[in-house]
Length: 207
Image (tube, rainbow, N blue to C red):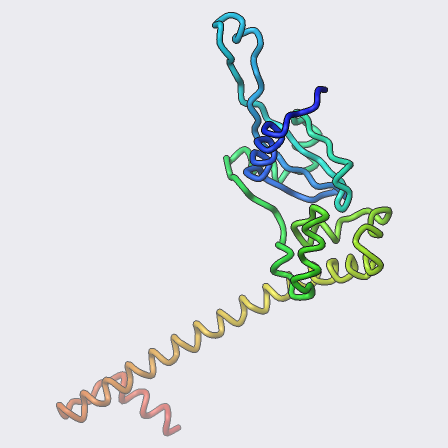
């Protein structure tokens, strides 16, 4: 395969940024579309003709030199099925996982260092092969352990937040009911009428 020129490399990088990225099985894959010249059509029509082709860039987390960039195969669709589904739904610029910027364990400096290694999500760190943890620095194994711990607890955190929201909604509902009772009491005082719901509420309070 011939070497790409600088402008072509920039264009390919832009296409990859618009693709869908996912970490799985110790690898990171990015699905994207790339125009490929159709030589037969170009010769037949006497002008450059291109077809849109589905490509995948695969790399090992922390080792950007290991990059593979080729046409999509069936095994890629199965291995990175979530990314492939989103890609087929024409979603763009999607990175599946928790962004490093959302992980409070990292400082801004450490986040920048990890991004320089080509890492984007907590899942990519958690899924790294042991042989490449050294590229993260002397705390690589500890960092991976923290990433796994964070991901394991995120489900519990989500459940806790959901339960908190439900409790809040119930409290708001109860307050709304109490406000309605108070409004009816005020109406009684003004008009001298006794509302059945208000009367029932008063009696329940006296029991």
